[in-house]
Length: 260
Ligand SMILES: NC(=O)c1ccc[n+]([C@@H]2O[C@H](COP(=O)([O-])OP(=O)(O)OC[C@H]3O[C@@H](n4cnc5c(N)ncnc54)[C@H](O)[C@@H]3O)[C@@H](O)[C@H]2O)c1
Picture 1 (cartoon, helix red, strand yellow):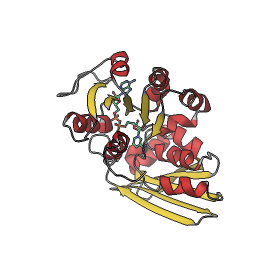
Picture 2 (picture 1 turned 90 degrees about the horizontal axis):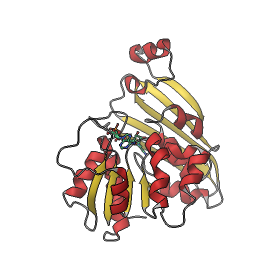
Picture 3 (picture 1 turned 120 degrees about the horizontal axis):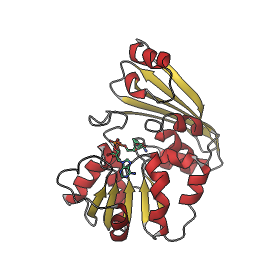
Picture 4 (picture 1 turned 120 degrees about the vertical axis):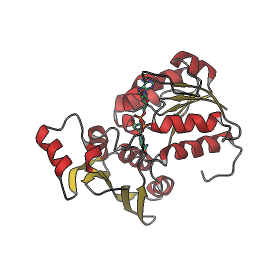
């Protein structure tokens, strides 16, 4: 499987180096597409068009805006797309564009959390009556362009956790595009944007990023608590995410026996 990586930051660089080093049997890096001032050392760099031409699979690790702009060009070329910036799919127009192709397929990375497989099954086994997600991150990493100076100051000075936003997954993922992709992943897994009640909490002492996910339904009652170390390079991302991407690629090669 020939793989191109779109975006070479905290997630993309780890994925690209692992593929270049032959860590995934049956997968080969054709190159990375990036938007940084300097090329990433030790990796083949391609323009977007060449990457799509050469790859069987393009892995999006570049953010919601890049996925919205470039995702459909991958699929229109009949190539597969593995998505990490799940929040972009909260926009119905983008969702429609990315799911309207017969040839190229869209795959969603599990990203920073687990349990999506079970919740997806439970949602189809008689339905879920409630799904609740609380994401807690280090306060200073949650500053957003839409916040006013007072709110930014509060985030930087707070000595206690503050719930910044609670609401439907679509609203929360749009408000925190780098930090609340998980809310979108959960909504996509259960197939219902309105059912998922999501929150983002800013904690001045949160050394680990946590996601507490609970759900109730006909099939059972579920609670997952995930606590990830942030990536040193991009603290809004958890260090586990590139390894979730690599696990997905490993599954897609068909050469490893992994849970599906
Ligand atoms: N699903 C999840 O659980 C999850 C978790 C963390 C992050 N994410 C998503 O993954 C994205 C990437 O995370 P990261 O930590 O690697 O970010 P990062 O900022 O470290 O790296 C992103 C890279 O993409 C590049 N880029 C941006 N636009 C581009 C474009 N149009 N073409 C090519 N390259 C482009 C940037 O230059 C940067 O190098 C985040 O923005 C977020 O949306 C998802």
